[in-house]
Length: 242
Image (tube, rainbow, N blue to C red):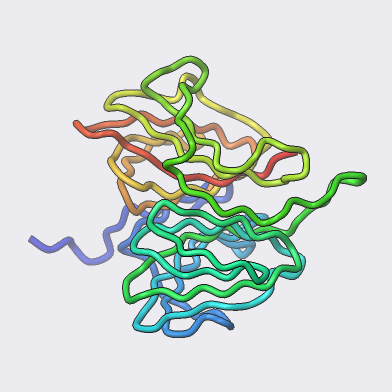
């Protein structure tokens, strides 16, 4: 049975947003050819960063220079070839790249390969050298029990170093595992559900979420999550730090 017209789980408010795939609208960006871009989160909604998803078509490519921005690129599906500042890498699903400011980049992917990208303006710390490019894979980052909770494990993908002003982590929950408490903090979040489903508290409301959903959280927006179903649930998320 088809879904009634006009029905969606998407909710956009001043301090948070839940964006579901049924409402995603493709766009284009300079430098990306034979690729479909979905801009999930941007300053247009009040955020101080951007989050987007790239799906390559046949012979898809993306190139440019970060300029004043920094990028974090995560391979959601398939793989691609990357050239970051003259260094070439072959990326598979689960690979990620941190691209610092003022760095040339080029990506080339096969049809239906997908990337997730977080972008923000780099804010340097006086007296600290800016971070260099990083290429890694999530399988090489062990999941640590979050605040001692073995069923909620956190993979920290970027170094916990004062040179970095962004963090990107993957949170994986066993069925019925939760965040230990309702978090309320200065950090802004952008989030993509990678697998599974659950209930997310945003401000004073709760929403069912599932793989493919996107969430934006403004600073000091109360947030909490519980995993549902019989399989683990996970999401990748950005936050501004330091």
